[in-house]
Amino acid sequence: MIAKRIIPCLDVKEGRVVKGTNFVSLRELGYPVEMAKSYSKSGADEIVFLDISATNEGRETMMDIVEQTAKEVRVPFTVGGGVRTIDDMTRLLQAGADKVGVNSAAVTNPELITQGATRFGSQCIVVAIDAKKVGDKWHVMTHGGSKDTGIDAIKWAKEAENRGAGEILLTSVDTDGVKEGFDTPLTKAVVDTVRIPVIASGGVGAPEHFADVFSETNVSAGLAASIFHENTFTIKDVKTVCKNKGVHIRET
Image (cartoon, rainbow, N blue to C red; front, side, top):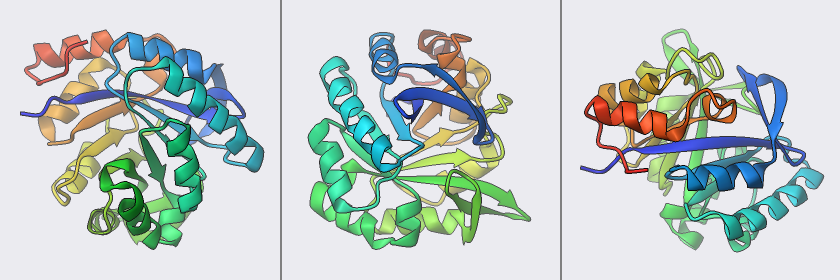
């Protein structure tokens, strides 16, 4: 049995870690390299950086952060946000990222997934899907969760897999920052459709929420931001609760 992963996510804007609710109302929380270093030491299995400003200036700032992080942490880390081309992927991987995340650009140009997987290997390509419930389906949202593409999120996850994605980072826009738990129906729908690992994201408010999604779906990892950044709970707290509930978890 493959151990479940606990992943802190750092949303980076203009060189600072920020967090909001339902993708808005952002507030600054700290410095990304120092926070990543702390999480690495405290038992994080991986780390995800999302450059949510992704302007030219933001991208240059992010490259510096990636280079510094690669020197300081000993766990794999993924970088996404504003990745639009193979050149963007190349620069991030050369700077030290282990994986790159693509979102809006992949929706616009799905061939980007195939090109990235061919060039760097599927293990380097993470397709981030921001999904929102619309009627009886989930739609893919882009532009920070603000634009409804009308694309079926479940079908898009399958297409991403077919095009060579090595992993799906699935965020529920509906539960993001709400702290009432992961969107289990959405997570299960995607996990049951694809064979590649899926990371659940959006809605964590307590360690039990990780244990719940691991128990109720076959998701590979859980990702959270607020509860770790605000020191509400530690990664050790989460792993202890998961182990006590019978979840096979990596040791801290």
